[in-house]
Image (cartoon, rainbow, N blue to C red; front, side, top):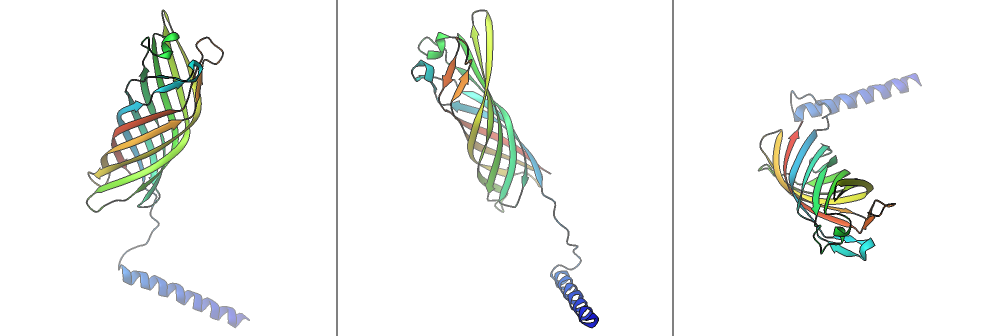
Length: 221
Protein backbone atom coordinates (compact mmCIF):
# COMPACT_ATOMS: atom_id res chain seq x y z
CA UNK A 1 0.00 0.00 0.00
CA UNK A 2 2.79 2.42 0.94
CA UNK A 3 4.64 1.62 -2.29
CA UNK A 4 1.47 2.30 -4.27
CA UNK A 5 1.08 5.74 -2.62
CA UNK A 6 4.75 6.54 -3.26
CA UNK A 7 4.48 5.59 -6.95
CA UNK A 8 1.35 7.78 -7.29
CA UNK A 9 3.13 10.75 -5.70
CA UNK A 10 6.10 10.37 -8.05
CA UNK A 11 3.82 10.23 -11.11
CA UNK A 12 1.87 13.34 -9.98
CA UNK A 13 5.09 15.28 -9.36
CA UNK A 14 6.41 14.27 -12.77
CA UNK A 15 3.26 15.56 -14.44
CA UNK A 16 3.52 18.92 -12.69
CA UNK A 17 7.16 19.30 -13.71
CA UNK A 18 6.30 18.40 -17.32
CA UNK A 19 3.50 21.01 -17.45
CA UNK A 20 5.74 23.71 -15.96
CA UNK A 21 8.54 22.85 -18.38
CA UNK A 22 6.14 22.99 -21.31
CA UNK A 23 4.89 26.48 -20.38
CA UNK A 24 8.44 27.68 -19.85
CA UNK A 25 9.27 26.50 -23.36
CA UNK A 26 6.26 28.44 -24.72
CA UNK A 27 7.54 31.72 -23.28
CA UNK A 28 11.06 31.39 -21.83
CA UNK A 29 11.74 33.55 -18.82
CA UNK A 30 8.08 34.50 -18.28
CA UNK A 31 6.60 34.15 -14.82
CA UNK A 32 2.90 33.32 -15.01
CA UNK A 33 0.79 35.29 -12.55
CA UNK A 34 -2.94 35.96 -12.31
CA UNK A 35 -3.88 39.18 -14.15
CA UNK A 36 -5.80 41.63 -11.96
CA UNK A 37 -9.19 42.85 -13.19
CA UNK A 38 -8.67 46.23 -14.93
CA UNK A 39 -10.91 48.97 -13.54
CA UNK A 40 -11.95 52.21 -15.20
CA UNK A 41 -13.82 55.44 -14.53
CA UNK A 42 -15.69 57.26 -17.26
CA UNK A 43 -17.29 60.70 -17.46
CA UNK A 44 -19.92 61.68 -20.01
CA UNK A 45 -21.53 65.04 -20.81
CA UNK A 46 -23.89 66.16 -23.54
CA UNK A 47 -27.40 67.13 -24.56
CA UNK A 48 -30.65 65.21 -24.30
CA UNK A 49 -34.17 65.29 -25.68
CA UNK A 50 -37.15 64.03 -23.69
CA UNK A 51 -40.28 62.99 -25.52
CA UNK A 52 -43.42 64.92 -24.62
CA UNK A 53 -44.87 64.02 -21.23
CA UNK A 54 -48.34 62.54 -21.08
CA UNK A 55 -50.11 64.21 -18.11
CA UNK A 56 -52.53 61.48 -17.06
CA UNK A 57 -54.52 63.60 -14.61
CA UNK A 58 -55.13 66.09 -17.44
CA UNK A 59 -56.77 63.54 -19.70
CA UNK A 60 -53.48 62.29 -21.12
CA UNK A 61 -52.66 65.62 -22.78
CA UNK A 62 -49.06 65.95 -23.92
CA UNK A 63 -46.80 68.56 -22.32
CA UNK A 64 -43.76 69.61 -24.36
CA UNK A 65 -40.31 69.40 -22.78
CA UNK A 66 -37.41 71.67 -23.71
CA UNK A 67 -34.03 70.14 -24.70
CA UNK A 68 -31.85 69.54 -21.65
CA UNK A 69 -28.50 68.21 -20.51
CA UNK A 70 -27.10 64.96 -19.16
CA UNK A 71 -23.94 64.32 -17.19
CA UNK A 72 -22.92 60.82 -16.10
CA UNK A 73 -20.14 59.08 -14.19
CA UNK A 74 -19.50 55.35 -14.56
CA UNK A 75 -17.19 53.13 -12.49
CA UNK A 76 -16.60 49.68 -13.93
CA UNK A 77 -14.37 46.72 -14.61
CA UNK A 78 -13.40 44.89 -17.80
CA UNK A 79 -14.42 41.29 -17.19
CA UNK A 80 -12.77 40.31 -20.48
CA UNK A 81 -11.60 41.99 -23.68
CA UNK A 82 -15.22 42.04 -24.86
CA UNK A 83 -17.37 42.44 -21.74
CA UNK A 84 -17.46 45.09 -18.99
CA UNK A 85 -19.76 45.70 -16.02
CA UNK A 86 -20.27 49.10 -14.43
CA UNK A 87 -22.30 51.27 -12.05
CA UNK A 88 -23.57 54.58 -13.40
CA UNK A 89 -25.08 57.71 -11.88
CA UNK A 90 -25.43 61.32 -12.96
CA UNK A 91 -27.96 64.10 -13.55
CA UNK A 92 -30.45 64.88 -16.31
CA UNK A 93 -32.17 68.27 -16.40
CA UNK A 94 -35.07 69.67 -18.44
CA UNK A 95 -37.41 72.62 -18.38
CA UNK A 96 -41.06 71.87 -19.08
CA UNK A 97 -42.99 74.11 -21.46
CA UNK A 98 -45.42 76.14 -19.32
CA UNK A 99 -47.02 78.23 -22.04
CA UNK A 100 -50.80 78.63 -21.87
CA UNK A 101 -51.35 75.76 -24.33
CA UNK A 102 -49.64 73.21 -22.04
CA UNK A 103 -51.47 71.28 -19.28
CA UNK A 104 -48.77 72.00 -16.67
CA UNK A 105 -49.55 75.74 -16.95
CA UNK A 106 -52.66 75.18 -14.81
CA UNK A 107 -50.51 74.70 -11.71
CA UNK A 108 -47.20 76.48 -12.42
CA UNK A 109 -45.69 79.32 -14.42
CA UNK A 110 -42.30 77.56 -14.46
CA UNK A 111 -41.45 73.86 -14.13
CA UNK A 112 -38.18 71.93 -14.11
CA UNK A 113 -37.48 68.21 -13.97
CA UNK A 114 -34.18 66.78 -12.67
CA UNK A 115 -33.41 63.06 -12.67
CA UNK A 116 -30.66 61.09 -10.93
CA UNK A 117 -30.29 57.54 -12.31
CA UNK A 118 -28.66 54.69 -10.36
CA UNK A 119 -27.98 51.97 -12.94
CA UNK A 120 -26.05 48.72 -13.30
CA UNK A 121 -24.85 48.32 -16.90
CA UNK A 122 -23.33 45.52 -18.98
CA UNK A 123 -21.22 46.59 -21.97
CA UNK A 124 -20.29 44.46 -24.99
CA UNK A 125 -17.38 45.78 -27.04
CA UNK A 126 -15.24 44.85 -30.01
CA UNK A 127 -11.77 46.44 -29.70
CA UNK A 128 -9.98 46.87 -33.03
CA UNK A 129 -6.21 46.90 -33.58
CA UNK A 130 -6.35 50.53 -34.73
CA UNK A 131 -7.39 51.65 -31.21
CA UNK A 132 -11.07 52.12 -32.03
CA UNK A 133 -13.65 50.25 -29.92
CA UNK A 134 -17.34 50.08 -30.94
CA UNK A 135 -19.69 49.04 -28.13
CA UNK A 136 -23.31 48.42 -27.21
CA UNK A 137 -24.89 47.76 -23.84
CA UNK A 138 -27.84 48.03 -21.53
CA UNK A 139 -28.67 48.53 -17.90
CA UNK A 140 -31.37 48.73 -15.26
CA UNK A 141 -31.87 50.12 -11.80
CA UNK A 142 -33.70 53.04 -10.22
CA UNK A 143 -34.11 56.76 -10.80
CA UNK A 144 -34.96 59.67 -8.51
CA UNK A 145 -37.00 62.26 -10.41
CA UNK A 146 -37.59 65.66 -8.80
CA UNK A 147 -40.20 68.05 -10.17
CA UNK A 148 -39.82 71.75 -9.30
CA UNK A 149 -42.89 73.98 -9.72
CA UNK A 150 -42.96 77.75 -9.46
CA UNK A 151 -46.11 79.66 -8.69
CA UNK A 152 -46.18 83.42 -8.05
CA UNK A 153 -44.07 83.98 -4.94
CA UNK A 154 -43.09 80.38 -4.13
CA UNK A 155 -41.26 77.22 -5.25
CA UNK A 156 -42.34 73.68 -4.42
CA UNK A 157 -40.72 70.33 -5.16
CA UNK A 158 -41.41 66.62 -4.85
CA UNK A 159 -39.33 63.53 -5.67
CA UNK A 160 -40.56 60.25 -7.09
CA UNK A 161 -38.34 57.13 -7.15
CA UNK A 162 -39.08 54.48 -9.78
CA UNK A 163 -37.54 51.73 -11.87
CA UNK A 164 -35.40 52.78 -14.87
CA UNK A 165 -33.73 51.04 -17.80
CA UNK A 166 -31.46 52.10 -20.64
CA UNK A 167 -29.79 51.03 -23.85
CA UNK A 168 -26.57 52.48 -25.23
CA UNK A 169 -24.09 52.36 -28.05
CA UNK A 170 -21.10 54.27 -29.27
CA UNK A 171 -17.46 54.30 -30.19
CA UNK A 172 -14.23 55.01 -28.29
CA UNK A 173 -10.76 55.96 -29.48
CA UNK A 174 -7.68 55.08 -27.40
CA UNK A 175 -5.24 57.97 -26.94
CA UNK A 176 -2.79 55.78 -25.02
CA UNK A 177 -2.94 52.72 -22.76
CA UNK A 178 -4.88 54.62 -20.08
CA UNK A 179 -7.06 57.22 -21.83
CA UNK A 180 -9.97 56.96 -24.26
CA UNK A 181 -12.29 59.56 -25.76
CA UNK A 182 -15.53 58.79 -27.53
CA UNK A 183 -19.06 59.60 -28.60
CA UNK A 184 -22.08 57.71 -27.34
CA UNK A 185 -25.87 57.50 -27.48
CA UNK A 186 -28.12 56.54 -24.55
CA UNK A 187 -31.84 55.82 -24.41
CA UNK A 188 -33.36 56.06 -20.93
CA UNK A 189 -36.86 54.87 -20.08
CA UNK A 190 -39.00 54.97 -16.93
CA UNK A 191 -42.57 53.92 -16.04
CA UNK A 192 -45.29 56.28 -14.73
CA UNK A 193 -44.41 59.00 -12.22
CA UNK A 194 -46.45 60.67 -9.48
CA UNK A 195 -45.63 63.97 -7.77
CA UNK A 196 -47.52 65.89 -5.04
CA UNK A 197 -50.00 63.00 -4.56
CA UNK A 198 -51.90 64.70 -1.68
CA UNK A 199 -51.87 68.23 -3.04
CA UNK A 200 -53.73 70.48 -5.48
CA UNK A 201 -50.53 70.43 -7.58
CA UNK A 202 -50.91 66.67 -8.13
CA UNK A 203 -49.12 65.53 -11.31
CA UNK A 204 -49.17 62.01 -12.74
CA UNK A 205 -47.32 61.30 -15.98
CA UNK A 206 -47.04 58.31 -18.26
CA UNK A 207 -43.75 56.70 -19.25
CA UNK A 208 -40.78 58.98 -19.88
CA UNK A 209 -38.31 58.40 -22.72
CA UNK A 210 -35.07 60.36 -23.06
CA UNK A 211 -32.46 60.33 -25.86
CA UNK A 212 -28.93 61.60 -25.13
CA UNK A 213 -25.82 62.23 -27.22
CA UNK A 214 -22.70 62.31 -25.03
CA UNK A 215 -18.99 63.01 -25.34
CA UNK A 216 -17.04 60.56 -23.18
CA UNK A 217 -13.68 60.39 -21.46
CA UNK A 218 -12.46 57.13 -19.89
CA UNK A 219 -9.44 56.50 -17.65
CA UNK A 220 -8.31 52.87 -17.48
CA UNK A 221 -6.33 51.87 -14.39
